[in-house]
Image 1 (tube, each protein chain N blue to C red):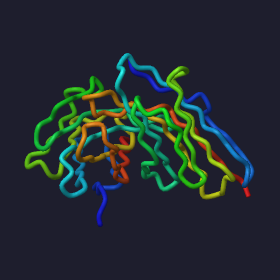
Image 2 (cartoon, chains in turn purple, brown):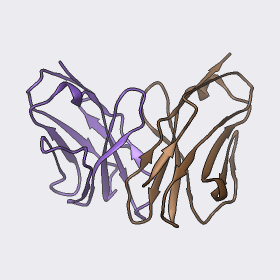
Image 3 (cartoon, rainbow over the protein chains, first blue to last red):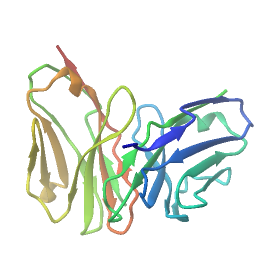
Image 4 (cartoon, chains in turn blue, green):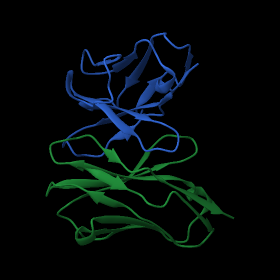
Length: 114
Length: 114
């Protein structure tokens, strides 16, 4: 039984570079969420998908951020022209059934922008 | 506006002590859901419990218990006879009906010393 997986686990990049993260949800979970967590804070919602449709985006998700879930399975989160303020842990979660059911989180991708 | 407040930033106890983690929430919805998650040093968020706003019955699961009081908008979490393995950051979260995203508090870091 596999949980939510995320790759890479760590990414170090230079300011201005583009980065892409991948999330594989629990099999058959139709909802997939992206959150961002900075040190000492709780996770903050970025966006979520129901199947392949992106249904909500946070104002935190600037135009440098884009997320996709093309076949309703895995998802990618791309950050263009990274800034030092983008340094954070990017968490992915998935859920099934009722919209308000519990979400299961992956281990996260820690991004460091130098 | 929706908000979750965990006023206790850090709590330190000695093993076998009981400890209560406080959570206060704000929402205009009459139907909503409350959650607790544990984030151990390894970093992966672990789901603990989900309650809906119509179910104020307290719940006990082993050494864990939860006290939900709508009158004070609180959903407190008690660990009885704490153990070193309980050391982690604990997050309280809220989701509103028909909106799956989780709104997290800032977390309470619990340290259980032997």
